[in-house]
Length: 255
Length: 112
Image 1 (tube, rainbow over the protein chains, first blue to last red):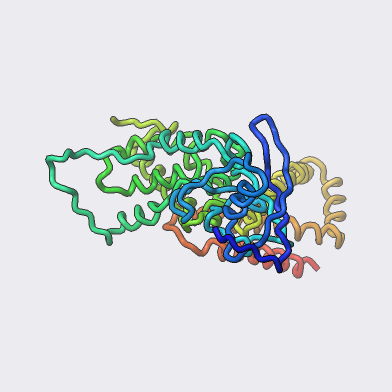
Image 2: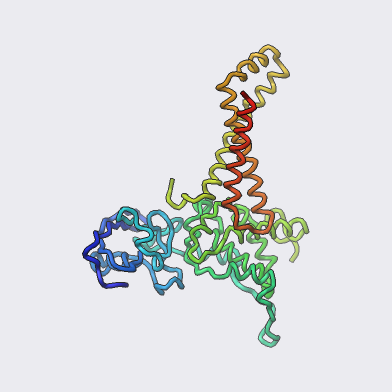
């Protein structure tokens, strides 16, 4: 964080949502402008200089950990890599907790449901070999590996989850991040849970719920495209259905 | 409109939904007119006379716009979901909108 406030510039008028699951309201603060100032710098400045009780979450401050995402002027953003001068409008900032997730306090959300949905869609690698067998050889240039790699750099920030209207409409919907992860694993030649995972993502809360609004792809800070991954899953499910490998209700037919 | 929705492909989604809703609302009226053709020649002739007025023709071009935009938007979604991914979906959405206007304007020119 830069510690050199620019006294020649007008302070930023910041509205920060304060509250608990029981309810809350916006609170106004004035924060001095600094060079190369990020939204996370603004929130940190408020906590250090104006109100030590402000709660928020961050860890790495370099766009790796995915823990500092918040709504900034109505749009979900990774606050540690979002510069104030890129998003400030009329010298004003409105900072809220991420949409579509329950609030713990102030700007900190409960991410449990987000990560539970990763588990629900079997968003983890399941190998079939042991340490006694030779290491798999994968070509980084194979079409399948390229598809898997394109979806693999997710930092779990939940920005896509916050930007998705379908998550808001259907609380069971697995969401863009979990489905993107599933697509990446479906294209991993070493994974052995492909059929089981496909049946999970084909259910009522799965890939077919997506309306392709592409807010996830628009706001993903790592420029991933969950909509493309979900479209891939839809095609994969359709093929499996035609070949009789999956039931209409999404449950696996053949063990 | 909420800030996170202000992006072209959300507008494409919204237009597709609203055009579908408009067509769904029109459909009962459409069936009613078809029923008139079968059941009452006099009333149907009266309707044809009414529908030849400029204002109705103009409104009809709006209906054609809804139909065309819904058709082209639906084709875009079929492409999105069934063909290998393309990064040109904003262009496709713009083309669907332009196509809708083109067809509606063509109808309007022929109507007068």
